Image 1 (spheres, rainbow, N blue to C red):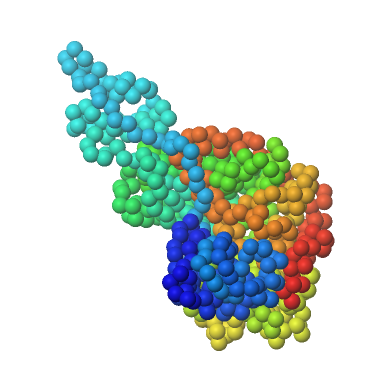
Image 2 (cartoon, helix red, strand yellow):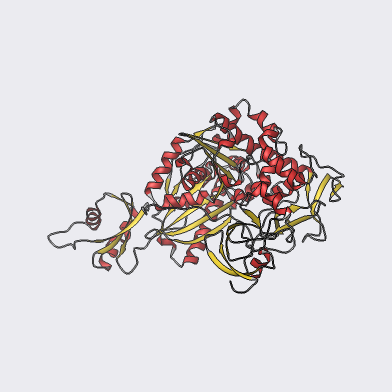
Length: 624
């Protein structure tokens, strides 16, 4: 204790780091955190309204629970306090649940990663060769192959082979991938150091991780928007565009290759390495994205009976795709399951270890498309649902990507006033997917919309009628950077209802095929760009995620790039990914008789069957 009203508090941050601060017991914990430079989500100005500034008290004496906390306790759990309401009355230890950072845009780059043993696909080894003599006039290539114990090599090594061997007096680094020799380098200094890149090719964004293949160390992370966006926001529009001509297909392939090359260039600059030292690129993505990367339009995969171009892992020379790494290096794709459940889901499963989970569990990947996997005993079922781009802000009147100026989180008080946070700070320009979800959820809590999703005109002065019908104003023209209202329209609500219904109905259908109830799930792994920024409670109010305790949800971040990283760094993981792809059974929802009926029921907020969301409905009542 530093003084009569001051105490020492040990804080566990969300990124695993720890720090210790001095707090004044006369102030709320939130005020103390902010004074010490610890940023924590807070929308309502300390009124206990938004439930964003949650902390877990591990030890120490605290002030009694306020009425606001008692309401949120039913939703967030018994060991959770609101930092804006609680005061610390002794030395204590706490865990933060939501640290915020101001950033220009939000492209999900982090992901779970655990490597048991470093066994990269490509490796470097130093070899001392016997020098030729008049009695031993064996060719340089044959001498090398004999010493390396292989007969396989990239023919491009021949042009530099003789010079490299003699430059270092017949001591060389051999870069080898499996049985194939990719390169021969004079053994000088760290010339044998080599690198690899793991890539997540998303429909909207592409993320790359650069690794030192000798140590397994992550050296740099970069991301960018997929250059294919200009040809269509979703996979179907891109397939249609590619199908029109060979030139269109080349343009789509060139766009994704160019984006990957831009990322590799930035990764190399950031880590201060030469690109020709990169020999391996592993790409995860949905089946269409991987098909377009390899120059196939995936047209037949989008039509019954939906045969994909390939599901196995494909390896292609980087030079054949135009990927700007060492021209002898390889680009490898993560295996897929079906036309609509791709390599990104295999990567998710690998990263989350869903396939090894001992109980009943599920994985939900929420991005431009929604993919779901359920594990029940030895059964692994997967499916894809057409959630559409609305969840990421597309097709919504004031929607935008999760970039600077987008409203990313929202809470609405009992008077209809909106409190929100803008990515990058400043005035809002629009609202992104996570903000739209939270806004509609709070509109339901405050009675601004009813269970059918209909806007109620007299419910709030923020509900106004315009040429396009009713809308709820989140930020007025005076508040926004555009000089016009930022609002949620009735049409926006309908689009979100369709998207969330597709996700929940797909999850419910898979659970029934697996012969388990959703409440039996012991763990739900949430992956994907949109999923990572999702508020669990708001998603349950909306009826998108099931009505189970929040502690059963586990966010794995960008599981796609995490899984690709594991494959890059471990041959065992690559083999495991191939096994997983054969074990998972894909379900085509269009063939399930009751799916359409379940979809219609799920369009209600949260659901037409109130028993499925009885806990959430009780929580809604407690906040009113």
